[in-house]
Length: 291
Image 1 (cartoon, rainbow, N blue to C red):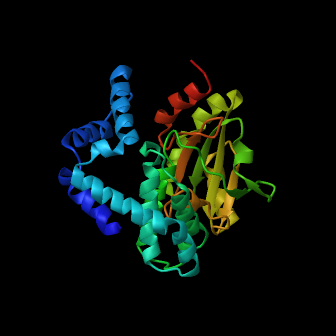
Image 2: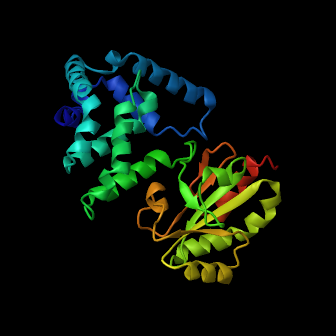
Image 3: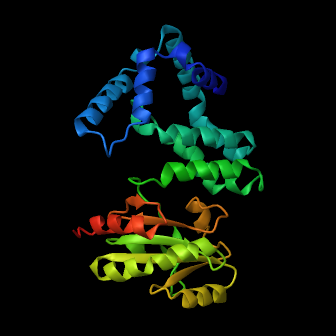
């Protein structure tokens, strides 16, 4: 099946109609913010036609190949994650990557069944990520999952953190109903601390208007976090992710990097993944309905 998909990808001109390929190129580079809404709507309307009538996008030869791939996929998908759970192997990781790629375009496929692909991702996160440690495939999967999940407009994920009272609680319980900046930082990460310090005046301006910062420090020792927070003068409290006890960095797609920032709306939607205070402030104001 992988060979068929690769054939379709590498020889698009042979298997797809030229008008469809031309439209795909336009759609992929569509600047929805600056172009007239009527124009954007017209492109999306034509794209909807093709996704609702898949046969129209393929040449005769391409349609035969596509149907063959679908047939093979429907036979193997229901059993794939179960088999890999019992027989973990390196090849499973490439199927995880394939599932992430499919999920990335789930909203444009007609009658798309995301279940088997979500099961592969869940299997990776629950079991496979602990195997073949050090293999570069893990970095590829982390990068792909980050691109899939942590985009503006996507719902932010839920995961456990240890609060300031030492209790394990879901992150959602700390940000519910507020415009929140999740600040993943570390005492040893210079860029993280610069970005965090730049947010201090922004926080002070909007903390009484529904904005909050939930900082989580990735450390080996509590003292390192406390000393850095005191030196930098953070006006918010920081939670401690000690020795990756809750796997927060991996779940946020941050890998072994220093950190990241996620601006979240009141309903849990990601508004921005920028770490630039100047970029974030107008987005925060808009989310708070401040003119």
